[in-house]
Image (cartoon, rainbow, N blue to C red; front, side, top):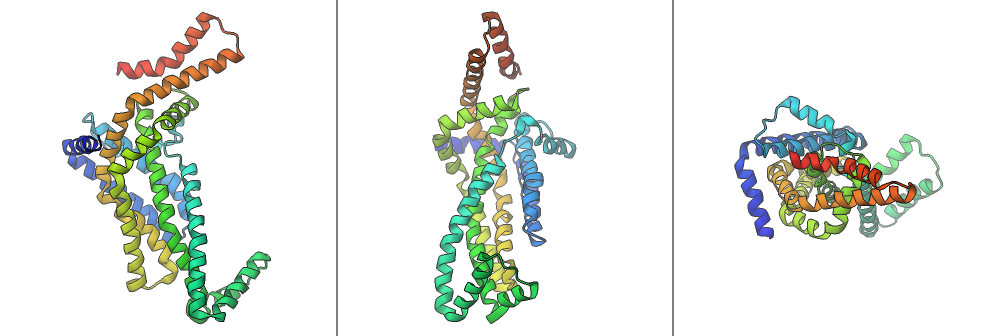
Amino acid sequence: MKDSLRTNSFAKFKANPTSYIAVGLMCGLFLLLVGVLAFISPSLLVIAVPLLALPFLFASHVACYYLQINQQISLSAYARYFMGFFRSQFRGSFRGLISFLKSLGFYFATIIVAGITFYLIFKAQYGDTFVNSFNTLAFQYMNNTEFTYEELVALLEDNNNMLLTFIVYISAVAIPLSMLAFIYYISFSSLSIYYRANVAFGAAALLKMSVGNTFARHRVEMRKDWFSLNWPMLVLSFAGMIGFGLLDYFLIKRIDLLPTFVIVGGVALLMFYLPFYFANMETIYKKYETHFKEGNQEAIETILRRIQSSIDLSEEEKKNLEASLRGQDNEDEDK
């Protein structure tokens, strides 16, 4: 089955390689541009990712989807798809906040492990000099005592940037696992985009319930299919993080920018795989399309039971309500 998925995905790509490559490269370059904002301030990513990166990624998914029906993709159409991300119908397509919180868990877990490891390394290398500097910083932080800017800079730069290097190394090492997790979580969740795009209309709550039902029942198999097709994307992302980190360490030699180079490296090479990635995601969705519709049917029945239990409906009222809820599926089937 996995070989069949690969064959179907590659056939889909070969049917329109120029358009897939154009969309993939454009999306990759845009994600790289967003990543570069981290050089100005990493905190900008908290705003840029949900307001720029995810909507553009969403627009790329939709653009590639319309390629299947030979619909030309213009810049104006791309702009409409970009804005479509903010419609209630597509709310939660990437589960951005949940994906971020999950990846943040990986970040802090890695911070703890890396912190202990580098503490032992730096203690062995610098001895009491490092321990005293570390304890000073930790004491001030634990007691909520404010440093003056000059005092903090002096402490971090003391002994050839010893403490700054310690903090930067921990941050840089913690980024890859959390970033790979974030890429996976938002990508896996994006499978629902294709189902949402096929629904003519419908309440956001019903769509969310339909998608949740499908993921709950088929998550394990869907996850296997995702990894079987998209593992090169994670490899390229990790290779980019390592490569850009080494570039900074050996050539640019800006130790304070090491975490930023790792972040940018995490998206720098993705453009070379995104054309295949979009075809992969469409192929995976097609395999589970019937299951998504079944998830919608289950959601409708759940809503009907809840309404019936709280409101005494006649058989005719129940049928009318059910017909109204099923309307979106009927329109979809008539397309």
